[in-house]
Every structure is written in structure tokens, then in C-alpha cells.
Length: 148
Image (cartoon, rainbow, N blue to C red; front, side, top):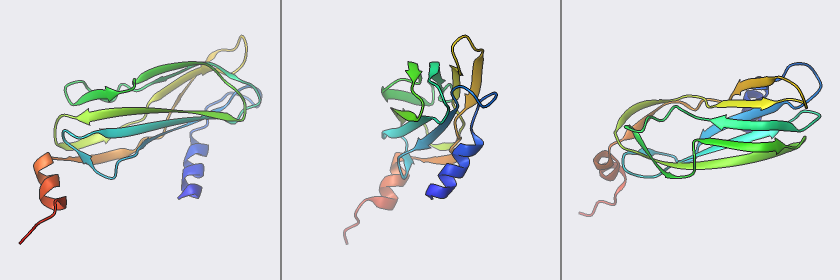
């Protein structure tokens, strides 16, 4: 699993040239099951594998419409002034799915400046892909203890 994650992150490297910051970003669902009306935890990880600090880093995830998801904790748009070379930051958001059904969990957008006075670089996190959000009743039917 770790090798697949590293390979996927390597494909997400966004940079221009060898010098400056180079960010790798991932987006992952931490829950085993997404269930209507229950908390759904997302984690974003951003790694700077470049030679200098990434400046004005912004993570923006507009893939969760307010009519489908409520925000329980955290923010979907966050900023960091700088991410030092050979370091990482993590950000966690807790959402609550409001409807059952299939949902396409797409990538978030990362923007940053790779070196002082440089241009803004735009990249994307990994995308968890399509997943099902179980109805609360279906989840209870499958996983609640049944006594005879």
C-alpha cells in the first residue's frame, strides 16, 4: 500500500524546473464506510520535496456541494504562508453527508509560489474516486447486532 501511495504521489508532483519548491498532495477518506447523517473524515497531506520553501500555499476543495454535505469541523479552503523544504503539513475536515447515493470524490486544487518572486504554480491532490454513501437505515441493517 505504501509503495502505491508513493507512486501516486510521485505522479502528482507539480513544479517547473529543478529549483524551488515542489509539492506532492494527497486527499484521502479516512472512514471505511460513508454513511448518510454520520461524520465523514477527509485528510489532506501536502509534502514539499523541493529545495526551497513553498510560499503562499493554498488548498481549495470545492467538490462538496452544501446541499449534499454539511461541514462539521474544519475548512475546505485553507492557506499556509510557507511550507519548508523536506517537510509536510496535514489538514483534516469532518463532513456530514446529507444524502445517500453515489458520489464522485474528486481532487482538490493546490496553488503556491515555488520560489521568491516566481509565478504561481497550480496542482491537484489525488482523487479518492467514486464511492457510495450508504443510507443510515441500510447501514444499520447491515452492521447493527441482530438478536434472535
